[in-house]
Image 1 (cartoon, each protein chain N blue to C red):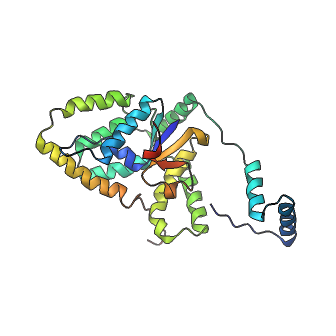
Image 2 (tube, rainbow over the protein chains, first blue to last red; image 1 turned 30 degrees about the vertical axis):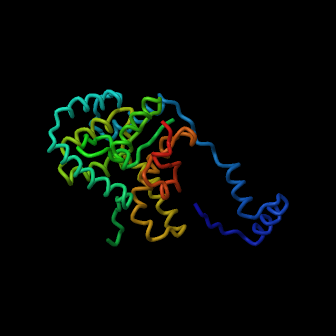
Length: 117
Length: 153
């Protein structure tokens, strides 16, 4: 991220002097000061994260699905897929050929309207 | 570690086997399974879910939609989109525009800032979290992000 900061002539002189004293350029000193004074990101544990997700899901009214491990879910689907016909497999190839181009080619596609659109 | 799936990795979960050789989606799907087996928690933000779901809806891919929901909408996985996320996303959008983001990057900006806002809202320290994506260039302005192929399960 690039920031533009307006400084008074006095502040600019103080910054230049302080940076020179530390062997840094002005931008380097500002970056160091920001790093030193930014509040740390709050670390949350797994139960806090789950509580946070649950709260948002309740607010949202998300229609949740059962909590199943990915391994179990994929194993269940692999069992279902055993009965796929050659035609269905070919259709799957075509679908994903199309999807992969769309999702990996141009990157993200969500673009919201501007006020004048 | 907590791994947040961007759109492409999230899409791979609902792929069924094809007749030809394995595709990048097949490999990504296996990678997600390996990540969870290794003890990582895999999360899906609503914006990634939306971007996959609409592509599947366009193609009327009913069984893939069912699988996408079964994977993404689990209580310990899904990050719904709330107003607070949109407010943070708007701040990031405004900062990026003021900083003179190139016009070519603008079409991706909305999705990137919404995803970033959802990730930032989790309040998880950086070494404990990464966004797995197929295009980290833009997203990594806001949150730690890497190609899914670079993230070790």
